[in-house]
Image (tube, helix red, strand yellow):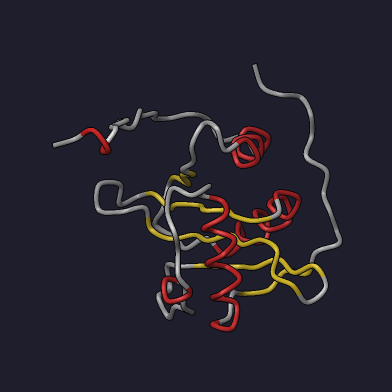
Amino acid sequence: MPDPTPIAMDTSFTLRPFQNADAGAVAQLVTDAMRGHWTYLPEHFRESADPLRRQLVALHGKQVVATAHLSPFGAATPDALRLDLAGDSRAFTPLYPALLPTLPSGFTRLLGVTREGFHEIMHFFHAAGFRNAWQSWGAHLDLTAFY
């Protein structure tokens, strides 16, 4: 059953397109959002001339506190865009609708990917009307005992 708790719109954020100067802050936000599963470097984040990619940042004062990124999902789902969010979850609500008017044509689905335990993103996706369309369970290997 959907959680009836609405997500309040926080207007204390300034939104703007990602700039290369944001790469360090965005890399840290995404690394923190992955809770130690992956580490991202500033080199992973650059302004793109690709007309199918969109990335915004949310600033609180002059500090980048959240990011939203849209890109083609991949060859297996050529009709889908992937939405990635990281940072202060209060900024997800203003970031998401700011991306919607910029969606490139030719795509019929918008997919978000997260882990069940990443509650801030799960809550946002649920409140924004996303549904669980596919679920997988990762392998859990103890490599310290592997020979």
